Length: 415
Image 1 (cartoon, helix red, strand yellow):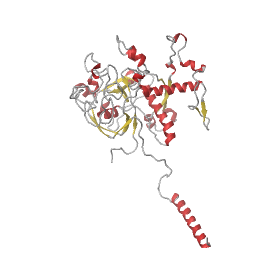
Image 2 (spheres, rainbow, N blue to C red; image 1 turned 45 degrees about the vertical axis):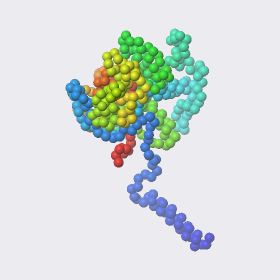
Image 3 (tube, rainbow, N blue to C red; image 1 turned 180 degrees about the vertical axis):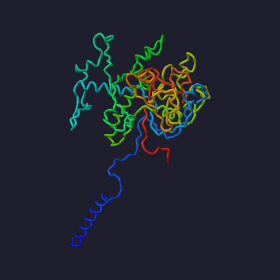
Image 4 (cartoon, rainbow, N blue to C red; image 1 turned 45 degrees about the horizontal axis):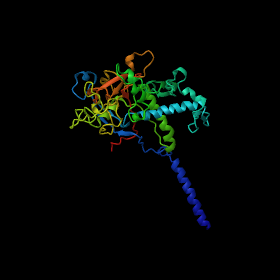
């Protein structure tokens, strides 16, 4: 290579380096370049509900409801929602996770990171024959019929939530710990609700079998109070962040959560504004006389719709958004606090009324909105616009839940 060629090559390299350096520090507003890519997510078992407008209020002429559900036009941001209620088998994954973490902690199966933080070692093999596992089962006089049964009182889980409203209205924004709340809940479903909810009614087989027997794996989980439903959402978020983000590098700052009351109503209508029922019609039977949901169609007549109690979570046809059993089967928890006059003061953009119960509060302040009606309800409660409530620490054999997840970015239907 001649001297001129070498000089020319060196000049090109130097020019390239100078140009690249100049591009980085050129004084131009180009943003941070090493940001992670984001193509959106498509959570398993969830469907996308596009942004849109909803007219809330009574779905039909109902004099009483007009006083507590005044008609109003609102807008809802796009979100994902589970296409079915959370099933027994899906919830069992949560229960088994808590059981495994409990046993691993008893056997001191931990790993430590570079900062000295300890985490449960999920790769280590658990020895269920070890004497440390004996406390997992009922012992002594509490054992029944010689059976080796798990003591479900051990299954507790701590979850957290952040008080964004309090933080936003604190002008000094003090210690961040003041806005972080923690709660420890017993997460095993209250199977005794099948007996307690009905006087002079033989439902013991449902208590013994509904949550654990494989015949009911795909049926909606019940006996879950509002706090436990929130704990499940918190655990599901951690599960996603631990595995999905680590495997794919996907960034998702939003959490799985209970839907708000009006997100639920918007999703239930399936894009049919002012629809009485999720299928869009005014009646609970189709043209052939077949019932379209699982409810109580007549006095003392539970099985006519195909289910004496609950049915599979994907029974009947879905609505136009692809959501199953948004009417009937089990009523569903929402994140919304119940107030009779809420429709007169809630915002028209993503309305949300929440209240964290404090010690000493009146019992009425513990009410949370449930929607959809259940297998034991008459058709009135199946209407998309009908709201009802339960106390947040109450468990019922006819109340379940499903999760929601806010969609980030421009709405898919906004092109």
